Length: 422
Image (cartoon, rainbow, N blue to C red; front, top):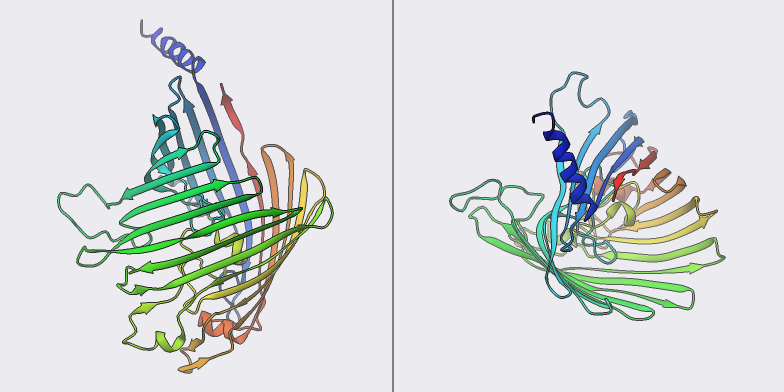
């Protein structure tokens, strides 16, 4: 009987899968990087570093006969050599784990740890470039019209550090105490419009909660072969430092095909900031600095990640004017060149000399990419970026030398096999 039990369980599993949809897959993503002036300027004598990181995921999805969907994803993230050969330390964590089911006709509820990706990814994204990426513990209510041209999403979540008995301070500074989100989306023949409202509850030392609100519009429109996209967001309320928030961001870009293989993209991102004069005023309890929250910052604000990365939010705001040239040699490979011109929106305070500089130009960044995908599940990517800094960039970063070389390169491959699908 004991010998027959594993066979019986296996037959049960096969029977269940035969009447449902099941998929088991993985992701292997090693990335070699050379960092020399990555995220900040180098001091004279500092040397660049070569390192290799790796993200490994195991993903499983399941959909039963009642159209109840579930998904679970475990990931391990590490830098090669981070742990010795005999380590017993676990680095595996739960990246996603959710269940989605129908509440009513065209209305579904998705509950659990999940990714949020909306519109131009400048407010909510999975930040997939980052080794750990990003997911949220939340519930998501989704409704769509009969033709799927109109959608409404409502999301919310409440966070605690542990199973509490009474109200205690939530000390995770990189997360929110609670969250509420509304997203409306309408698609027309050549146009798409969205409205997003995101309320982040940020807890103060007395356990009271301030509400940091971000809301705005996103749109895209195709005119002949030219595609225009743009967004405008405002931030209001009060933040975790108990400051009044009054900030904005506006973005616009146009994608123009030159030939079937060659295309140009040009545009700008303008993020408001707080002036150096106000930052030095002890009685000014307000911030005008827009924070792009959970954006794909690596995609939009330069591959060298000088801005809005690893906790560095530009106090004086940022203007980014860019031009991108893209060439698709075939279905298997493409290459592109990006040029950025960066400046602050407001004056910069020089802490070293206790002065204010009105030279807002921070420098230029040039990014080059080459991507090759020989097979459906296998992709290679190479990138090289160089930042040409100004003295104002050194003042902003409060370190480094503008004349030191600031460059960064990476070589990455990604393999996403499907082990089993039924």
